[in-house]
Image 1 (tube, rainbow, N blue to C red):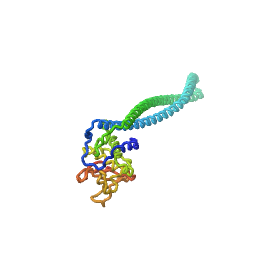
Image 2 (tube, helix red, strand yellow):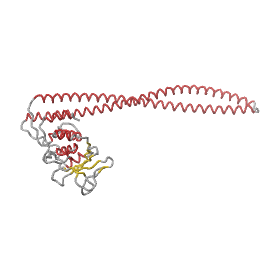
Image 3 (tube, rainbow, N blue to C red):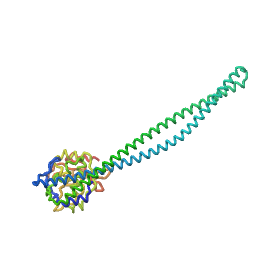
Image 4 (cartoon, rainbow, N blue to C red):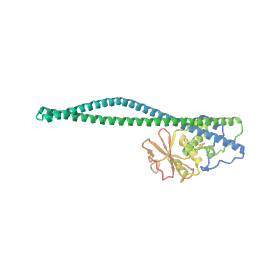
Length: 380
């Protein structure tokens, strides 16, 4: 977003734009109008190019700051996760002590098992010589039971030991993964900071060039009084269609008379997906007029009461009704109580396309689509 106050002061120093325009508007790719004085044209184009580049660099700097904040947040989350994993690792170190204790118990049980086996062997030898002794038979059964119990305990300890070792390996793998993620995030953050610093440096250079041009005192060419594409962003700026359109809306609003700007500030708005694609298909040669109409819709001029000296470009801004006459209910959107409006894109042309938009209760606007009278789908 441009610095609105600084940009408004710069534009107020230029001749004011006559808001009433004719139907003739340039195409999306039309060249600027021809001016007789080549030095004046070069100076004007240089100023516009510098201002456009400054807007691009400001936007890039803001995006880089957002990326920086996001990377910083991700870094903090990853560091927090590593801390948790380190705590888990410490807990598993305590488990290793428990495993060592189990190993000691295992060794002791194996010793006891060996002793029991030896006692059983001795008992069997004794039983061979004294087969008739019932007491020895009972002792043999008791020793066999002890042997089975010891073998069961040993198997349980082995299973528990394998499970704990597997858990430790999985925890160590997770810790290594998150440490790698932290390193990647740190590297991306450093690269984003470097790009942001470069953008800020370029922006300072452009501002210095603008200040030098302002102080030079050279006369500048008088701008065309009609709204043409050379009032908008320079085509060399590498912006998406939606970013360029939003920047042109802001520039167009700054060309409106200062009294109107005080009464009708540029409000929040959104653009529905496919809106600009519909505009290119339906109005291929009406870009400048489309920008002015959308500007008047967003700031509320199109819905203002008409007067004898009305100079707005929007002639008709009506509520879109669910029926053939004004007694029918307005088309509304249930989830947010927005009301559908329609605007004639061209004057005195009943069959011309209509621009449809939603007016929300807070007076913000959502630009919906451009279509003909009978093919509008409000897209609730």
